[in-house]
Image (tube, rainbow, N blue to C red):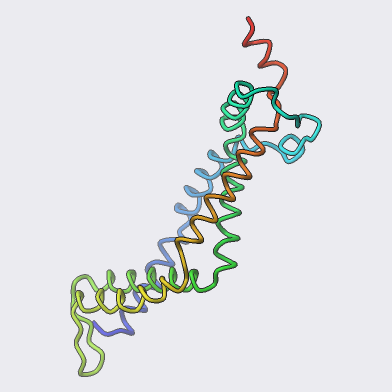
Length: 177
């Protein structure tokens, strides 16, 4: 299979599969279900309900309650921080695109050898070449530090909000009964 036909089959087939009306509707429906419990910014950032917890027990109760109650908001924050981390690390985005595109092209070959003029490459040679190119680039892109930054910033954002946001007054009366 030639390189040009492999590229064309990847582009046309994958784009048409991803842009099918049924696939788009299914994706939108699943996203709507996940984010149907998204709280409004007015409720999420209501500073009138922010206070310092009195003791460690109250802190635990607040974190437990708020993580369940604001779960969709916290997921949205982590997704936004992930996008920010990728946008600020262009080399990592390029490496992810290179590896993803390379794997897609190699998988489209279906186990056949790639022929470019008089050069014939086997599937294992293509995977090895992709590995040889992507590992040094991935090392330079520092994905571990990006992941550690993402974990740290997500924990700080989520846990600080969950710690300082008071539980609604209705839940306090339900617990005492």
